[in-house]
Length: 276
Image 1 (cartoon, rainbow, N blue to C red):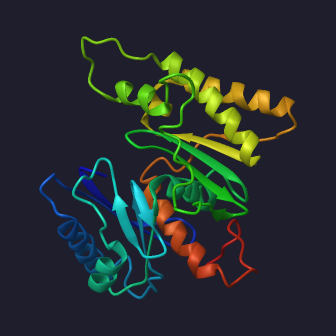
Image 2: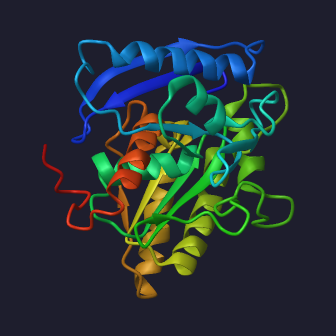
């Protein structure tokens, strides 16, 4: 997050072994933040909780535009100093472990698939309404990123004249001013339209609605259900899930990404039946 570094160590069943939240400020450089993360990881390796355990790797959940193939964070709206940061290279050099990076919303979807409500859902949409507005996509059990890693970039898609999810969400996240701002009801209407289109395009098994706005305004959940009922009449059968991984979901999903990579060559192990 822009103001803190969240670190989490999980075992194969999703049990939290260690969790930390360290403050950051605007003067913290990307290199300093990643060095801090690596230092804590190194310290954890000799802790009582992890001593004698095999560490499979490090996952990093990052906001903004990423290049997962090269391990680079290209840009992040709320982290202006983070441009073309070689996250994987810096973390690997300091921590000495395999490193994978992914967008926050995709990590939230992974967290729910590995440890939460989504179970074995192969096709899952996660619409995140927070400081970052994004659509995470798991299709065929895999993260779908698109050609330029921009799949799910729904914040600025025009829903009608001069109306986007960004234009409706941003004022609701800002401190009150004297200027009129869009209502949550207007956002609910736009959300219904967005989900109706997304279900028609991707035909998912399940949908997650996450973020501070989804937690704050109950009319958004009502609107999401309305969108799915309309989709059901068109033959779709998507289910709106209640998120279960409510604490450190992006970090938990980053751990799930490491499990995906570790077990990719072991088809006899399924996501919902891991034993240790």
